[in-house]
Image 1: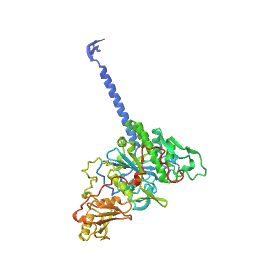
Image 2: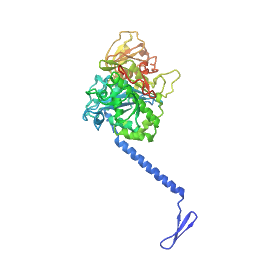
Image 3: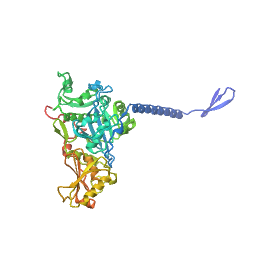
Image 4: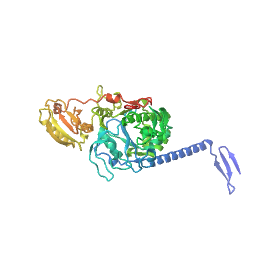
Length: 505
């Protein structure tokens, strides 16, 4: 028998005695239910993260160069994105070809996220660009020798493995730009197709009808119609076909394809931002992407990937720009145009936007637009060869410079008298792809200027200012070169604008 008594109740036990049992209030029950729901949600979220983590592939960071550029003073980030045309892991069903073939990079761009996290600039690197590929690690643990005048996309194939060599491509980009790459992401066919499906398709534009032969020029007939002229939404296989088409549009060049890839990425970013960059919306994207992503160990967890994506949410579409590395044809290949390329890398290193805005987040002294130089003691010249030329009548400067260089690990290949002996400012001359090495040399010579001269070496031409420790500070570029700026695309541009290159488009 029981009876109630206020907030408790009386009940009779088996031995006939009575006991007071406290009654649970409704708010306590609701609190317990809410706690259970939270715990279930936490377990579910934890399970999702564990599932994502198990899908992420990382490459061996031991393959990165032993002589990397130093990190800049700002909080900017450089992310190398590589589109792989490897046919392994089921990718051959989407792209055709031999599933056992070696991995190659089909496209690549360096994304510079400015320190203010309000601007971003993606620089496309044409696959046929002639570059210097520094030593890269092979599967057996040995290292290759430096390759000059090599095609850029061949760096990914060093080692001849089906998954490619992301570390070698990262080494090559760092050698080319003088910028430290903070993260590298490789996306294969499956990952790309899955991403476009998750967002519900991407809006693109075709300047003309496109047929199967445009995608595969080895076909004997025109084949079926793949795309009609004009705007349309694509996803999955269609989206992959769109970004891979090369021969059927414009002059059939990789440069024209890069323009269309930039337009596609602009539309993709616009779609993701319109849906909202939130953890809830990013989880399905991450689930699709991680199954086919290969990343550096620094992005090797779902939490790190999603956190990085969330850090980009405040970048306005108009402030998200796409450009192409300054280039010109060299026969059937592409040559880097200097000094425009070096000026572009210098502007990014100084966190200057495409219009010259300082996006470093640093507070500069009034009238000072220069970036803070790295202290001399941190300079490591290991693996860098320098020839010293005395541009003054002070013979002691040569030995002073040689001592400073060798003390910091540089190899002095020779000394000589410069063609002029009345130089006032020290000049560091450098050849193709050697800007980063020249910058290291310049740190030992206060007030030194950098000058691209072509060739394949680095020269320190001493000026009179070196005798007094230097008297001027090199200025930071105020903007990227006009040749690059005038060809830029914003993520909010019309999807039908500037889609062809050359004749026939």
